[in-house]
Structure formats: C-alpha cells, structure tokens
Image (tube, rainbow, N blue to C red; front, side):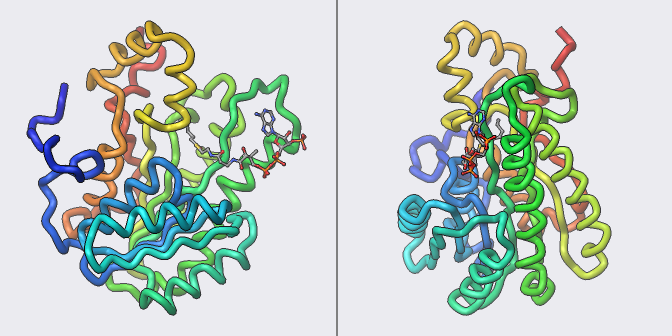
Length: 280
Ligand code: HXC
C-alpha cells in the first residue's frame, strides 16, 4: 500500500509527491490560519516549495515565527511571514494580519482555514464553555478568516479557499462531540461560501483528513495500544494510516489549474476509513 513511486530519497518527498512541477505556484500567496500546526505547516511547505509565498497565522508567537522560518528554507528566495499572537476568534486580529500579508507579499490568492481546537472529553465532562471554545475557534474562527480575506481574494485571478474539517460528524464520535458539531458547521459554511462567492471567481472546498501520522490526534491513538493501532490500520480500506503528504498533495491538486472545476466539495483524505465505520 505504499505510494507507487519511489521518491523517498528526496527530502521533500515527506510532504510532497514528485508529480508536481517547480514554479507551479509562482507569484501566488497563501494565507494560512493554524499554519504552525502539523498538517497546515506541511500544506504550506508544499505550496512554498512549488513557488508560492506564504503568511501563516497562529496564537503562539514563538511557534508561529519558528514555523515560518522553517517553511521558508524549502525554496531559495521564498518569503514566509509568521504572524503570532493572532486569535481567529477576533476578526480585527485577522484583518490586521491579512492587511500585513497584502502589504508585504502583494495579495492573497489562496486561504487555508486550518486553525482548530481539540481535546478529548466526554459529553458528561464537557462544560458549556468547553463546547463554546471549540465552536468559537473552529466555526466563528473560520467565518472570521473568510471575512478578513475575501476582499483580497476577490482581486485574485486564481482565488481558492480550503477549509479543514474532519470525518467525525458523518457518524458522530465519542469524546469528540464538540469537534464533530463544529466540523459539521465548517462543511456547511463551505457550501454557502461556494454558492455565494463561486460566481465571483472564488473556489471553495473542504479537505477532511482521516487519521494522519505524526499529528496530535494520532499520538493519542498510538499512546493507547500498538495492537489497537494495527487493528485500526487494517480496517482502513486503503490499508494504511494517512501522511501529511497525502493532505498536502490533495491541497496542491485543488489549488492548481488541474483543480479548476472542483468547487463546493468535501474531499475526505482518509483512505475511505469513514466508509468502514460500523461496517465491520
Ligand atoms: C475538558 C477542557 C479541556 C479538556 C479545556 N477545557 N481543555 N475541558 N477537557 N482537556 C475547557 C476549559 O476547562 C474551559 O472551560 C474551556 O475548555 C476553555 O478553555 P481555555 O483553556 O480557557 O480556552 P482557550 O485558552 O481558548 O483554549 C482553547 C483550547 C485549547 C481548544 C481549549 O486546547 C487550545 O487552544 N488548543 C489549540 C491547539 C489545539 O487544540 N490544536 C489541536 C488541533 S488538532 P471552563 O468551563 O472550565 O471555563 C485538531 C484535529 C481535529 O483540531 C481532528 C482530530 C483527528
């Protein structure tokens, strides 16, 4: 079940497959919330490696600036700005970040709304404020991200918005009731954004990652039992846990010219795992 090409000898193969060409995203700018996180930093890395410049947004100053510096190393001449201290729950904070991105990088062509909150808690143990925190970060935060960037996106000839969701809400998920509710709202928001802004040249889609190796979510699973991980892996129709590269490659496809007619879709990058839920 390994990918059918052998590119593991080149460093970028960890986050990008070799089918893409250099300079694909030359002169494009991507604005990423949650850009220092495991998945979004790799999506950004792939886009920057292929020619884009980037602005990544996060709550933590140190982590965001470090991630920006690290991402910039993938291509000589790449410009990657890290804006820490920015909470997606505050639209003014995002508007200021978007303004800086446009001043320093020349515009915004792609948005990845990746900032999310997550912790494991039963509905019994969940306070109303805990529920609200995740709804605010994931749903209001995503709305705010669109609000802050859309005036700039509308000036781009290749405007794309990518929402990051999950697959929990297709079935419901124990200990993730808040996250599942929030991600259902994110999918729904994407659909309305696609309908309202599609005619104005902005394409919107959702990527719903499944279990992805080396993320916090996977760390939790791995910390349970090795046997449980193997069992889970065996239950995935594609036969393996996902990688950050799987998500980055799907992102490159959607943002490239090859994805021009894909609009208003939720694309699960999960090896068909969610379709197996309850099928065993
Ligand atoms: C129960 C919890 C809790 C926990 C926080 N709360 N952690 N309840 N179990 N483990 C409750 C608090 O008690 C409080 O409620 C409320 O949530 C708000 O907590 P704060 O710490 O005040 O909120 P805030 O500072 O805004 O922090 C937000 C956060 C935090 C989501 C709670 O964890 C955070 O900032 N995380 C950011 C990074 C993150 O989560 N990344 C994960 C992304 S991965 P009370 O009632 O006490 O006031 C991801 C993947 C999803 O999203 C898919 C997985 C496969």
